[in-house]
Length: 275
Image (cartoon, rainbow, N blue to C red; front, side, top):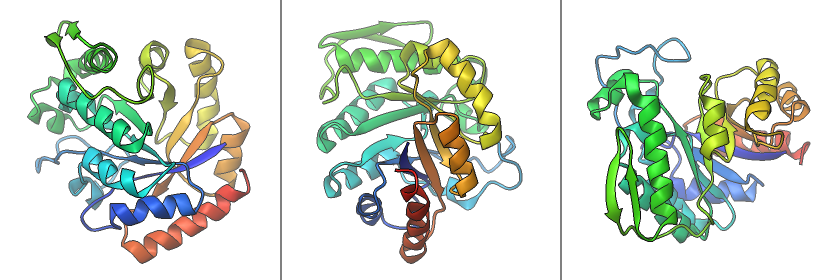
């Protein structure tokens, strides 16, 4: 089982160029960053975890800019998003940004995707929340076309791109892995169709086992599971190991440098028992 970190990088926490090397020094293999472009003040949509929306949601740095800063100060760290709000992003720009990071990093980009939960945030980007799942699927398929074809085009119900050139192409072939977040009935079908892994979040470890079994029935017995926002208590890690999780992304709170490094030390101690 492999271990990485999932977190919100903000203007109030550790600097990205300090965080990346600190992860490699402690043996973590990956970093997955959350994305929220903005948070409408109305706050119509309840926070999915309950209670008040935590401060870091309001202050996230752009994940692709952040990962581009981390790429040259690291050598092996996988650079992922958890999740990219594909329904809030132009697919042509998304394809170019991920491919650019893959090129800059020497083939270490991972695109984590999801359909989003903050409906007013979604609406501000011109997206109808009721069709966001279908829009996500079409945009991801369009991104794959742009990554893999010299002359790419895509024609769907919601996305249309005429025959076009789009470079750079990713270093990874056929393209960077796509990790699919979510827990809707359609999620496992998405993993089977275009995903390299399932990226669950917010599911208690003891409830994850039956879902992993169902995933592998739909998407194949060797489909990887990468748990986003995981706790680092040993009993949770034991459960992940038992049910066949491939990578655990410990949740790192957004804090200044000294507090962050101490937290990483604690997490590295837990992970060391399972490497």
